[in-house]
Every structure is written in structure tokens, then in C-alpha cells.
Image (cartoon, rainbow, N blue to C red):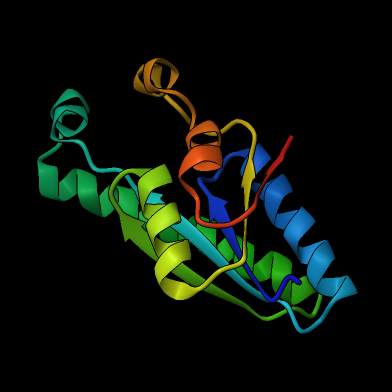
Length: 142
């Protein structure tokens, strides 16, 4: 029985489709508690590549995550649904799995394709890795 759903957002159109799916579930079953999470994957190499200090780059990523979560809150408010938000730092699949486990989520919803880079293609997508790491069922929305 669904009671707590974790939605992984990265700002991509697929992640917002995942949010729309979770919001529709919450419309059908109002007792569902939704939490939208953005994971900031800081990389010193990417910061240097972008010509920023690590501190500047990390601040940029956190600001982007905050804007993404604000958009999620707006989408939820338009449907009359309360949603919690959270920014985590680290590897997206690992952090979403860990957060779901420690906070007792019974379902994770993510987009099928996100804002990945070459590293993501080599190591495997977040959604693919979540299917194996998550402590609960995962819905991948395309």
C-alpha cells in the first residue's frame, strides 16, 4: 500500500513527468505523502572545467536544485497537493536509495532519462541503478 512516495528530480522533462505521475497518484489517494528530492552531484573536475571554484560550482548546483524544487512545489500547489522537498549531496542513485531507506519510503518515482553526462552513460543511468539499489519498488516514467 502506497503511503510515502519519493520523487527524484533533476530538472529534466522526464523527471517532471515522473512528478506529474506521482501527483496524479496523490490526487487519487490523498493520504499519500510526497517528497521531491534533488541530488547535487558535486565534482571538483567539473567545477574546474566550468572555470569556477569548487565553492562557486557547488553554490550554482544548489541554486539550480532549489529552483527545480520550487517548480515542483508550484506544480503540486496547482493540484492542491502538499509536497515536501529536500536537497541531498552525492551520487544520485546512492543517495535516493539511502534516503528512501532511512526515511521509510515505500515507492520511488524517477524519470527514464535525465540530465546526464558521458560519465552517466559509462556507469549507467540513475534510474537503472535505482532498480537494483532501492529498498522499495521503483517506477521509471518515460
